[in-house]
Image (tube, rainbow, N blue to C red; front, top):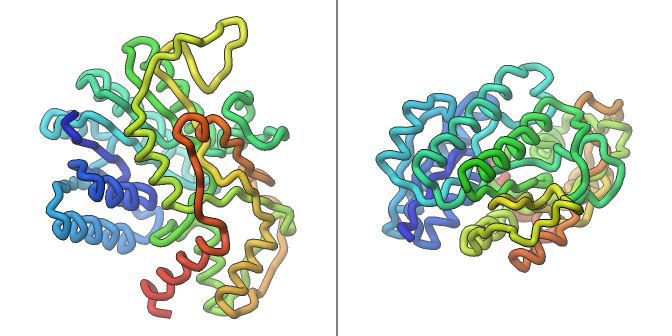
Amino acid sequence: MNKNILITGAAGFIGFHLSIKLIDEGFNVFGIDNINEYYDVKLKIDRLKKIEDHAKLNNCKWEFLKSDIVQNEILEGIFEKFKPEIVINLAAQAGVRYSIENPGAYLNSNVIGFGNILECCRRYKIRHLIYASSSSVYGGNKKIPFSENDGVNHPVSLYAATKRSNELMAHTYSHLYNLPTTGLRFFTVYGPWGRPDMSYFIFTSKILKKETIQIFNNGEMERDFTYIDDVTESILKIIKKGTKDFKEFNFSEAIPSISWCPFKILNIGNSSPVKLMDFIKTLENNLGKKAKKEFTSMQPGDVQKTYADTSLITKFIEYNPKTNLDKGIKLFLNWYLEYYDK
């Protein structure tokens, strides 16, 4: 094992935390990110500085290149030079609502870019491709909790459709080229250094500024909040676990989460959905401030409830999320108040 790992989207929220986690584990990490302006570029730059400082402090190898996975020639050059054994694709245009305003960004990054990743993994014989999918793929499903073995044929946003397309594309490459792939359906990941476009970040900012927060679907929303450290620990365990062919695959009882080829899909959630109004109350209690609230209708592309069935990942890596919402919010707010000097 050469311990070389390529992380795309390394300046993003999960990519940042995962890079530090893998550096701590002694991996050589090469990060790429296009550092787009979807949200605060300064936050992304500061994340990269922190990764670099962390690598120097621990005398570990960290390299970074500002690039886009849509630029295939540059991507191939990275694979040729760095020779990664494992690739973790976290580069994507994020955000459900933004996909309605700017669909082209999603098609470019999430479909064409992911296709480039698959081709490079095939050509350079990567040992394992791990990639970000999303709980959004469950779309209009009413059966809860959401299981990897449920059908996901009714996406309600273009973002969700592109993430589902990634899973289908990955399966094709696993079948045709025996490329081991693992898709991770993340459920509302939160924590320090998080994404400013997400509700917990927006609510915190507005409560502190005494501005009105918009509460969609009149507050009738639930989310399965998953703390960032539980996510990165899970990815580390998946890396160490490795892959295998699923010879036990039964064609007469075919299930979507596995295949006859080295392919797997896993939920990463907390399996404990929180009502939106309870979540806001947790923020208020920890901030010692009341939110000004405006209740409004459901937004296009949103789903009312997310709820992860984590039985498959629990069986696979003994998954055990350790951070409840109250603790996770405290850790986020400690960082937020320090970073923004409120």
